[in-house]
Image (cartoon, rainbow, N blue to C red; front, side, top):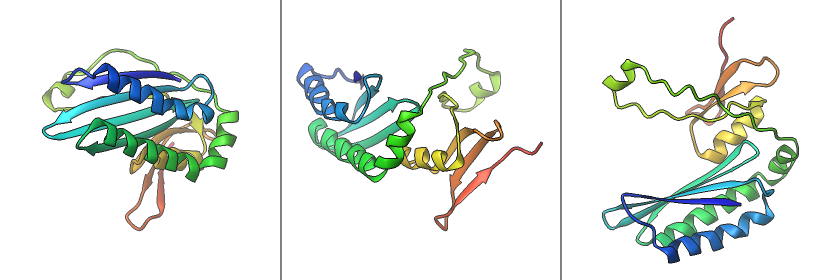
Length: 174
């Protein structure tokens, strides 16, 4: 697994980096060799916040924890990702066997309208998938919506979680 450790407004110590790499090595048995992990460490007052994102075959695993130390935050993130893997193990195994990642185009342009507001831009590959796979991916990320390319219609769609616990699908009108 390729591991990148990033410190936001701080320098991550070598012993912390070594601990992160040692703990994340535990996931090597679950993922093929092409997995990438990004660990972001932030210090917010007395709290230490850690975010781990693992990308493998177009599937993202994400956990974010805040604690009094980076070690405790790391332990929380590890257990959260383990829970995600256990909860969705059979679906993930089936998906990992047949996954093909399609990189997103990066045009590098920003419009002048974005400068008027504090807009955070996020890019990610739009992989063709079924709505069921999109729900799985949305739940793995812990988000309330997910944008994806429908594998049957080849349209860009959005899946979202409704207040009553059910899911909604937004499909563009032709």
